[in-house]
Length: 88
Image (cartoon, rainbow, N blue to C red; front, side, top):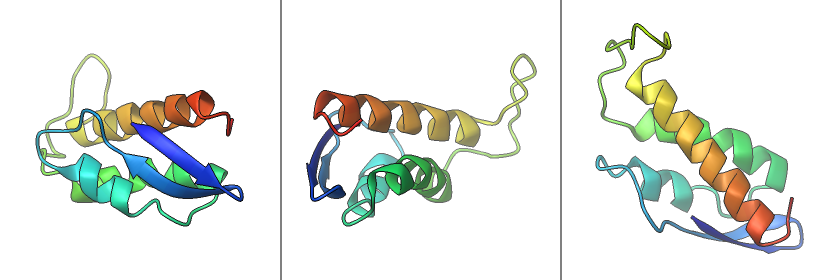
């Protein structure tokens, strides 16, 4: 992801590489206008909401579903993008 921040709010999120289901783009679109801290939480939640992976498919090694992994990956990508643009 690439993020543009203006006045401590998300001005734009560009998805460089997203989930096959399309959740990345919808979640990114919904970040506009959010504060920095809120965007980190919401990107994970919105990704889970729009993800089409089977939430019942728990990974026995990690105890998480693919939906939970998707949230973690998107949160990490948002943090990385925010650090890169100097917002974190």
